[in-house]
Amino acid sequence: MKNKKNIMIGTIVIVLLALGLFIYQKFVKQQLHFKDDLTVEINGKFDPLSYISEVEHGNIKEVTCQSKNLNIKKLGEYEIVYTYKNRDYEAMIQVVDTIKPVFNGLNDLAVSINTTPDLKAGVEVSDNSLEEIKYKIDDKKIDTSKEGTYEVTYSAKDSSGNKIIAKRKIEVIKKIGSEQQSNEKVVYLTFDDGPSENTKKIMDILAKYNAKATFFVTGRNQKYNYLIKDAYNAGHTIGLHTYSHDYQTVYSSVEAYFDDLNKVGQMVKNEIGFVPHYIRFPGGSSNTISRKYCQGIMSTLTKEVIEKGYQYYDWNGDSTDASGNHVAVDKLIRNGTLCHDNNVMILCHDTQAKDTTVQALPAIIEHYRNLGYTFKGIDDTTYTPHQGVNN
Image (cartoon, rainbow, N blue to C red; front, side):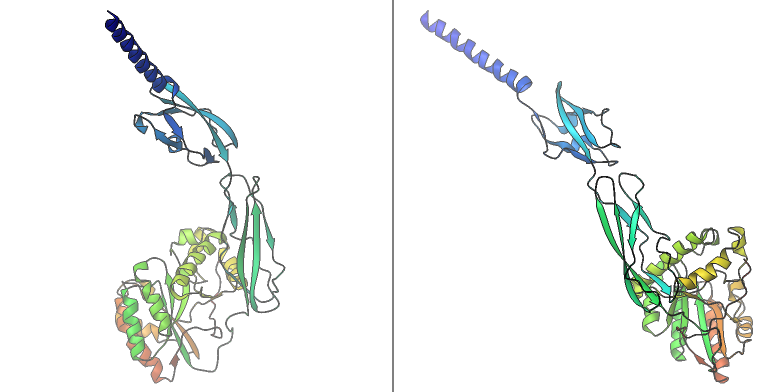
């Protein structure tokens, strides 16, 4: 009888212990564990499950979260509720701002000597707080009366005290180019719209005749960008034409033009290590197509590019290969040899469709060589044939 009683008591004890353990595991012991860092950046992406470090006896997919109280757009501490196996867990999530503002548009800038650079043009500062951030410019070190390379400091601070300081290189240079032709008989062969497969063929012909040329490149066929470096290493001049060659985009505004120019400039810098200062406007400075998109833009651009340290080059000789693809070779030769000024700048193109330009090139070179001309790439002293501006 006594043994029976002991067994019964023992059983009750075991049952009570098991029940107590169950209650502890189920209702007392915390089964959801959180990380130490319970912060999220303002206007950032909030992933509630990313704050959980451990889920006991289950899967994180079983956890649900109620975060309607959280305002990701406002700094502060917010309570959110997690639910796991019918039990709620409160967590205090803090919306913080620890990220510095970011400057955009601080590309290296070249300006002509004795001009006043616009250090704000194209410069923007953004912040994860989405607030409007004002910035300061320290340009005390610039002396635009002297050629040289200078440094400008930009600084900005958001309302949370996060501060960014950025440096920008400013190069003050003499005005490029000459408005007068030299007495030397020189042909400047220029090729627009490349690079392409034809660029290599043209370079081979130039090498055969020991002639140099200038390539005004675009960003439309970048699988051939290695040819930009090859041309530069071969002694040819690299100029900037346009990144997109989309007239509607390029000529929609002055800002849009310089955005396009900066893009193609940075692309070329990636190949040869610097941004060239020689440019050719899409359609030339005398184009009229720009009227459709922005009245008077060419009158503005022809002045501003020079103020920014560039020089633009039109042409006084034209192969007329822009009139269409696969233009007859004899027509290209005839038109490409019409100009007999001392300094001849001939417009050609080196896109994939200009195979007849490649075929006509030897005859054009031989024509001028027989007349005593040499063939050079554009440099800082080259004559600048500027056409009349029509917009």
